[in-house]
Image 1 (cartoon, helix red, strand yellow):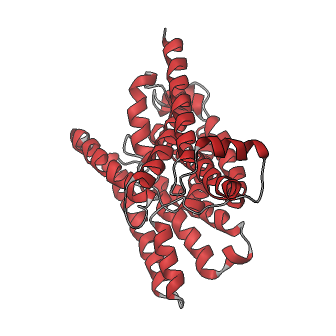
Image 2 (cartoon, rainbow, N blue to C red):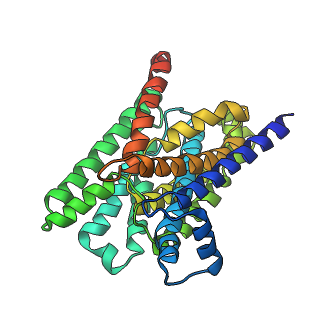
Image 3 (cartoon, rainbow, N blue to C red):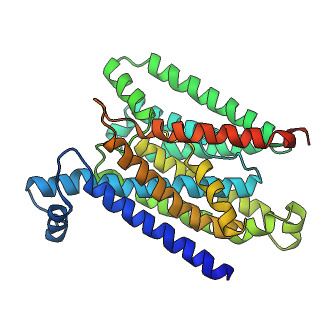
Length: 333
């Protein structure tokens, strides 16, 4: 019965991802219909306006929405299982800010322009450093310790990012960085899709390898060790996997928060609170959520398109407050 319901959940989430992906292809200011887009897709490529809209604008945006949403939610679910803390999320605990700082350094120094691979590499490096620092600062603490450590990392990375912005000799470049930090997948190209996909898939593989160890870890560290879980190896897999996913996502989209917090919490009761089942469900749920949010920002009538990171924050912050309020008794333990 559990297997059937779990398979049904994955099938439902997969259908939501497919529908959101199609909606992402169909919605836009140009008014091009699905039929025209389907013809352009079957033709493969071309120089016509519909082909250009599909291959240069909407398809890269839809692909990145699915990849980034899945990566953020998967990383959030894995971090929550490893740290055994329901408030762990790449944005809240400082990983996204550190990744953004690495990307800003690449943009500020001009490395991203000369060597495009430098942008995701520095973003991933920032993520790795943030995860290692977080584990060092909050190793023996509770939920409050983890949040405070994350706030410290985010504040430091935010201050260094502001320093880079204030020292930038080009005000137009500074403005571009500010808009990039708000989080968006508008005007992205297939080049950026191909650039980050290897890092994203590599991160997925590393995090997928933590599924069974996380099940054992949910019983406690000593129990997991007695069952043969190599804690050092698990730490390495979580650190590198989350860093690759979040770093690559941040490199092309800027900071998009709270996806890794909201999605695992909504799906955890539906998978029987089992970490190994939560990981694939969270990936599908994150892809559906971010694709849906990206469609929403295009449907809202504003002079300038809303930034995707702003929309996810408006949804995620009240949810985070709810979790903090519900977890207050645990802070004294």
